[in-house]
Length: 291
Ligand SMILES: Nc1nc2c(ncn2[C@@H]2O[C@H](COP(=O)(O)OP(=O)(O)OP(=O)(O)O)[C@@H](O)[C@H]2O)c(=O)[nH]1
Ligand SMILES: [Zn+2]
Image 1 (tube, rainbow, N blue to C red):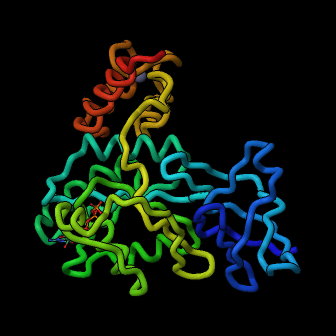
Image 2: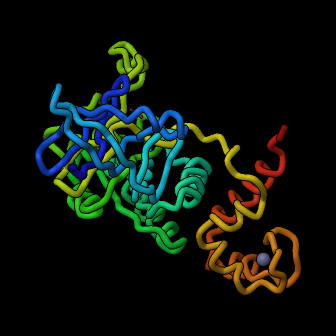
């Protein structure tokens, strides 16, 4: 029996990385009965068949995390990438991405890329998001800024990159590892090259214990997974932190008296824009129609 990690899966054939190399494997039929599908990122035990030398996945170890989009297990970290310009910074999207990463229980690093286009804006954003409790890296693939620091953060993690189109996710990944040759460029040229044809996700190996997913996760920003307003409150990092001191345990920090979050906003300890986005997210979740 061999231990390994699934790094790729195409048409029911899984590539399992083991101490004896990558072994193409099939899943035991019984998983289907148990309604269990092996995922990229799964730690598994395999047996080598003497007939065709293929592996058989006989055991899937319990998952630490499980993302639905993209479907991948045991991701440890989200790298949320935004550009300061071209496209302009969109903190509303950023705060939604961060809410999602927090909800998934991922350690998160925020990257402000294209700092060559507006370094002042990058510095400003860094202060805001660091005080919210996030690790922040200012980056530029053009000037080679932040790449080493990001590499250090990727070490011993399985990371998924998230962020809107055109902010430079593929450019950053290509910088990080010379072996990656991900498609970069503007959206129209990518479409011409068939970006939207069906493809399979794969874990790219940085070293034997560090991987990144080759396709951006959380590109969809549907908040359906959030059940109620209290979840927005609990997964909004600094609001959750300051909310512990509110007069009422049930405080949603929007209109209750004795609210230490509102207090922190007034004292400029919590960024006003973050708080405004929080209030908008509360509204959005309240208004999601549920069936
Ligand atoms: N000025 C500047 N441009 C950059 C930087 N990084 C990437 N770009 C450019 O931004 C454009 C988009 O980069 P991509 O790496 O394709 O962006 P992406 O986030 O992977 O986009 P999608 O694949 O559509 O999600 C390209 O034209 C890059 O050359 C940077 O640091 N500074
Ligand atoms: Zn409160």
